[in-house]
Amino acid sequence: MTLVRWRPARDVFQFRDEMDRLFEDFIQRFPARRDLGDRMWNPDVDVHETDHEVVVEAEVPGMEQKDIHVTIKDNILTLKGEKKQEKEVKEADYHSVERSYGSFARTFALPTLVVADKASAKYENGVLKITLPKAEEVKPKEVAVEVK
Image 1 (cartoon, rainbow, N blue to C red):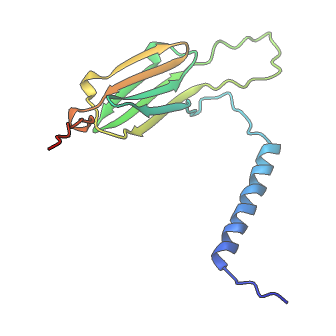
Image 2 (image 1 turned 180 degrees about the vertical axis):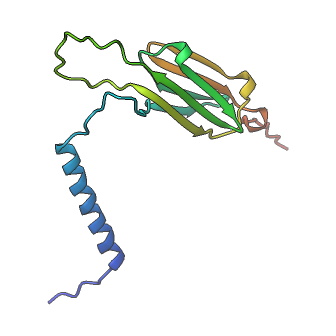
Image 3 (image 1 turned 90 degrees about the vertical axis):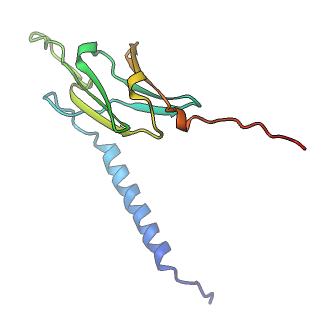
């Protein structure tokens, strides 16, 4: 007979992994019901940075400029808006309604200090692109190495 060392933490993590798989399988078999009423939805957002700026891109197709609000305060970026449902056609028989409508609010702690006064936002092809210049004190500075 072989002796196997008992590792309680490993057993707990394996149990949790099995439970996670069980719930994922269950959820995949029964997709979430989509409500047509006012509800929160969250647009997908990418945040990346370069040497000189932080860039936030949010997918908000079908929205108008007046329905999107961007604020920056204390290095926190907030996106708010509302995607309004088109007029419902009474005489049509819908077979599927999957598009999301309603209000959204997303808040992000920016990864570095930015200059909020110089931020810009552009909306094109359903993507909102916000460019936030980094503050001077956080931009990388190259130092020349002197050889003696």
